[in-house]
Length: 434
Image (cartoon, rainbow, N blue to C red):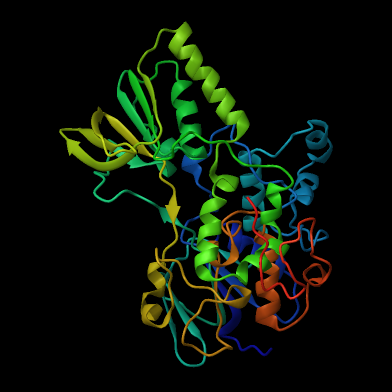
């Protein structure tokens, strides 16, 4: 590769965990110039959901670099060593790391890498026939051979929701700190985020007068976990999944949803015990658990919100709340800065970029002008794509693709795993079992 003073090889848009992994593994690679841009002034990772007692659902060994390069200095274990915590951390015998400490690790990496540029937003990206041109909000223009889109998903908000002080997405929960004492509160969404918000609300000294937890799922379902389940978060599964027809991929992702978005047993048990205590010991009868209820409409009514619910047989019900918290998840969309390229990019239903081999976005540009989509491969690469489990693996795959070199031996060694995902050595068919 050749460079000139005004160009780089790879530009990253957004500095979340995924592009941060790419930056960490790229650090120190010879003959590769990278730069990563983030509009925020410093690294943060969903601070509105950073509860003090939240823990990671993914092992700390599945950090930014370790699965493909355990000797890399930007691993979580080295973070502990650098901060004088290693022995104390190990002596604690944590089953998993707290989200708070893992975020501190990510911020340490982001603040240490010279390739990470904060307080610099990318206004727009275009392709001039030779390279990508990225214009920043500082009036600068950066030229790059390839770009990595890692802006992250955006909150999913039900259509027509009256957003404001009385109705907001759960990602803002801790930042808004709504006044809930003596008020009617509704939490919409039966996943882990909804459960953690419910747990926090029920733990208040003076809590809501009425609290409703609404989920369209038929039950408040536990996370599917364990060694056999975790095999779908391995490179071997990802490769098998990628070879399947699109309609089969979509069905499998839906079937496997509870492996990533169910309630962790510890959270579910703590929440159940607290609800039991409130109901029977504290005689608080204002707590309603409402699974199997779809929110058909949200209407603002004089400072409150009217919720129109529908059950599985079509019966409607109406409740009112002073505060509605939307724990309704996220969706992956095309970032605004790629608008100049919109007509040249292939997208999937729902807005995610369509991916081909090596996480390349499918577009009408030349092969030597790669756009990499991070967190856009849930359908094509499997349910593990939005999770942290395969972050380092994806980053290594992208770096080998952008350089044209075999940089990470882990990508080329045995990867069969304990589960046989294929019926033949060619891997044309996937073995699917209940």
